[in-house]
Length: 194
Image (cartoon, rainbow, N blue to C red; front, side, top):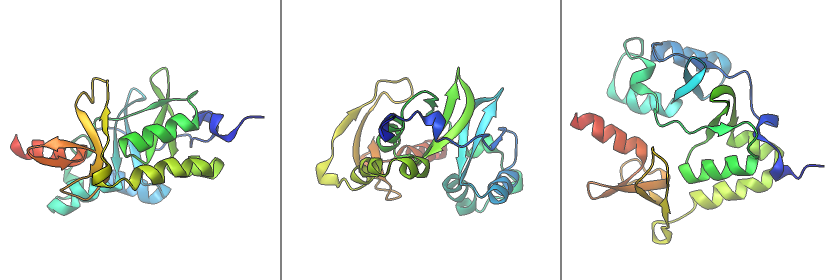
């Protein structure tokens, strides 16, 4: 018998994944989300995940800027620093990745190709005790900040557990121009500077 925490993500993930291409309009992607009652669409190229568009991305990068969804492409809105997990990884590993990176869903891959998606809800449904990891991470106050060093090509800076001073997001933030910001806000500021 498998202990709930040792269950591979392939046993709890949703599949097939609702996906889109980078050239689809946000209008079409929003309709896909509505029709399928989902909060995100994985953007793929040759069935390999290259980004993800979430409801939050649409609100922050399209609606709040009063852009026309039919005129905005997925590649302009998607989070490009997509974090994936192998299908044979455990749900404990998935929960830790979600907590560390402050995300709610992980595309699941096999040999780099998209085979599913696992969400916090999927994990909690089969292993409620893992919810504590996510709750504990989200409840960290700025006074309890802990440095996290991520050794990947995408995240080579030092991060702390804290609150984004721009949007209020609680989780992984880093110092950017004198303020602690989440990756999404940093990305927005960098886009404005270009």
